[in-house]
Image (cartoon, rainbow, N blue to C red; front, side, top):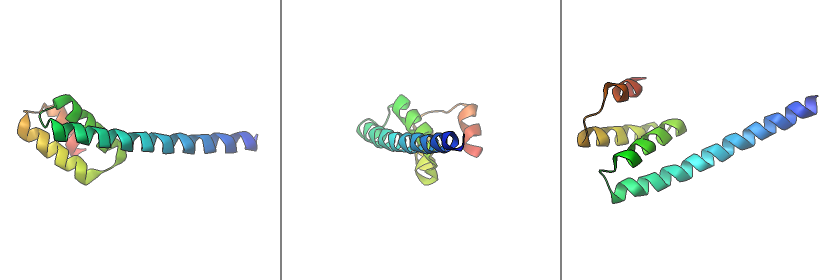
Length: 83
């Protein structure tokens, strides 16, 4: 039984590492997309979500400030910011 738990723990760690790596790749792709097209609302919102998942707070803050200059953001957006 403890072997099963060890295997599950190792599997969960591998999944977390894969998710972090996949998120890092996604962040880089989305950064390139918004650099090429700064007014791409969908890509910028996806980038904000990915940065939030990764915990990159400074980059997250920068992206939120940037999008708020380009668009009027709904109250829900601001509520997530202050959380």
